[in-house]
Each structure stands twice: as structure tokens, then as C-alpha cells.
Length: 341
Image 1 (cartoon, one colour):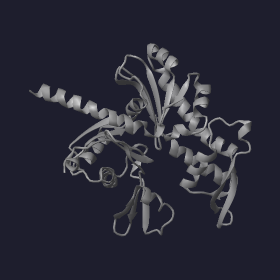
Image 2 (cartoon, helix red, strand yellow):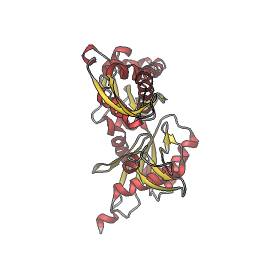
Image 3 (tube, rainbow, N blue to C red):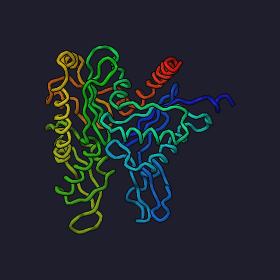
Image 4 (spheres, rainbow, N blue to C red):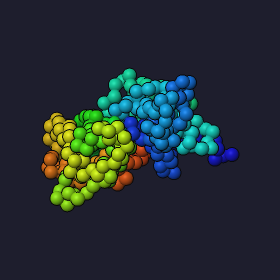
């Protein structure tokens, strides 16, 4: 019975594309798409996560698949709460104790949006909750020495947003958030395939194309790379499949990469010179699923002139960093208690 009532501590990366839950002393316990399926006639949720993802584009109009997080913030409060409750219960399995939670949010969200996240968490019967900015958690998860008075730059490319931050002495000194990220890459791939091949494809097909033949720096070695994509022929209206070439995909994702480059340069332009020198020495660290795009570090180095490194476990950096912040929660709680005396 001790194990059942043991207080669990969770780090949650509540992302636009995926939700990842880290359990203290256990590691990553859950990784699911941030999506729900709803019966429009009854307004009941019929599936969450992977189960809901499998229904995308494969049901009648009676069912709707919804991403309750949009561009890194809560777009549907009620569905986000239900989704979080489902994921936390699934990750914890048998524990009856109310968990402690560190949850990550983009660095540019408003006070109102931050309050919405806190309210959503409190309504789930959480014992104690703390909010951390995603790039800060990503830097922690990537094992950067962020508490030293040294400049570190992290670029966290998620599904809905790319978070850029310069961190020194335990704080974000300068930062920016843009919507040029993984989902935007999928959108432009869908658009380019429609224009160049007269083929309408779904979101998941675009994601598959990006993973298989997408790259940030097209070379002559990629000229033979191709993948066969399935969709609907927009001229005839019937199912069809076409061979998609890597050069077309590279042109598509280039639009998004250039937006990320501009945002990184804008942050660097307002960074204090002392921290700029540190970043030049240490390089830029990439985290998030979008950072896995082939040859992205090389492309960013070419554009910006600063070494760029891919973090270990880029997909999990934010959740792992949130897990590390659980110890910080204990420290802050003790300080608050001491000050209240």
C-alpha cells in the first residue's frame, strides 16, 4: 500500500503536437499526440492521444478530431483539462496520492494564458504545481550550465512554436517565440505537394514525407531521394499516389527555416555583448522534434555563423528539464514557508 499512496512528481511538456510526461526517478512515462476525438452530437470525448490520432480523417462527420493546444497555448480549455487528466492518470497508473507537477509553457504566453494553465492543473486535483518556460526547461534537459553567469542559447523547435532563449545566471535574459515550427513545415509540404503534384494529402502523410526525405540543406546527393505519397488527385477527385522528390520538400521547408533564422538573429541582435561572446564559444543548442530535420544544425551554422549542436534526446529535453525543476519546487516552497513565519 505504501507504493500506492507515495506522492508522485511529474514533469509535463504540454506541447501543441505531443504531450510528454516525465516521472521523477523513473523517466519518460508517456508520450502521446496532443489530440482528442469528440462526438459532435453528444459533445463527448471518445478518444485521446494515439487513439484519437488514428481517427484523423478516418471517421464520418459525426466525429471531430481537435488539437486543444494551438501555437503552444490552450485553445480549448475544457478539452485540455480532460486530455491532461487522461494522460496523468495513464502515466501514474495505480497511485492514489495527488501528484506534484511542473508544467512547461512557451516563454511568450500572456498572464491570462498562464493563469488558464494553472487553473487547468488545479482542477485536476494536483497537490502542488509550478509553471516553467519551455526553453528554460529545454536547456536544463540538455544539461546546459544555466545557473552560471555564462551565456547559453537554446532553440526549442516544437510542433506549434519555436522558442529561442539566451539564458544566464538561472534566467532567460533575451528570448522570442515564433510559430515557424514543425506544424508549419507540414503545412507548407501539403501546399507544395498540392501545387507541384496536384495531390491533396493529409497532415500525417506530410509528416511522414518530412521525416523520410525532408532536409534543411539540399545537396546533389539528395537528388535521387523520393517517397511515394498517397492522397486525392485534385483534378479527378479519386484516390491517387505520386512520387514526391526531395528537392520539392526542401523548397517547402525552406520557408519555415528562414523564419527561424530571422528570429534567432533578432534575439542575437539584442543580446548583451558579453553573453554573445559566450554563445560564440559554446554554440547554439537545438532541442524539440523539429530539430531532428536532416542537416538543420549545418544549415543554421551556415546562415548564422555560430556553431549549432543537436541536444541528446531532443524530443524529451523539455520534459526531462521539467523533471529536474521538481527539486527547485521543493526549494521555493521551503523559502516561502520560511518567509511566512
